[in-house]
Image 1 (cartoon, helix red, strand yellow):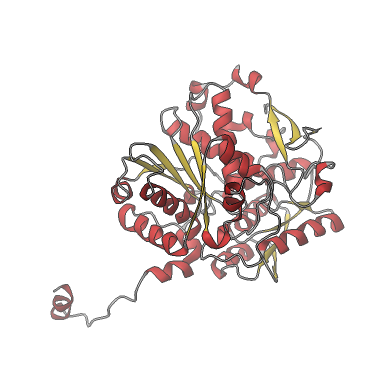
Image 2 (cartoon, rainbow, N blue to C red):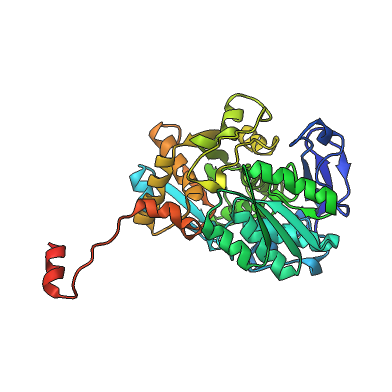
Length: 416
């Protein structure tokens, strides 16, 4: 049984029923794009009577071990590929490089389609099935589209994916193999998102672009990352959580998860959230640091090697709330810092993540060097996607290996 009760607008407080397809608040949404964000509200007082540490510890690790705290009202509609239950890896090598004591990486790229987006889309597609829709449409630069196409294939739904022209071939291939109808859109992911919304209006397709302001369930799967971190740290929250941000849905969802666990009495303290973006697409960081609530205009020239976080917009208050409520930090890192972190993680920990993931580790290193993070603090970096998702970027980190004749004398020269 889910303890989800209603959808509530973050701006005006108006409530909407869970059994109707609602994208945003009808009143506040009229103010413009990314206004009228709605969020799922749960009856956590009732949940306290059913959920405690022993109950959760008795269940198999997965996103759906927390089904009471997810918005699916009919359990028979759940669409799952076995997502969640990802490892929290203590990283002593990277910690030494950054002169810190307690550093962990939450490895999200061991999910079925190799990214955290599987958490998002097991919930999104389950909700789509519950609503009785047969076609979904969305815009994505890669990981979200890969997850959406996989879960739609599992559920037997038609799937239209609009991708920006610059999306990497390795990610596009995975989407097409899963059977999604894939269309390249000239311009940015924002242009693709606007077209997805228009297509939803015209043909009645269920719109699932991963922007909280456009689809209310985006953070519900992500919040289970926070739940798992707390359990893996012995029912404690870390001091800091570093999250790479494109549109910021993930950091908003993770923060919500920590707050819910505290309200349920499962943890005592809350972490401070750090949102990390690339310098060439740091719209949320800039909006946060300027004390604003929305992006006045999208960055049409947003550029970074980390294509998964190349959004160029601050889509509403969701990520900003996480940073402000947690007394967190927004930090931008250069592409050089991102690639250095990607290489350092691989060399010191054997963890090969994509640049978008490495941004979190780069942000941690940068704030340690600036003295904003105490070396004794417990910090967790959320690694969102696998290095094999963006092999083109990884190729910038390596050189062609030497080639020799199959003779020991030749090898001896090389070894010397």
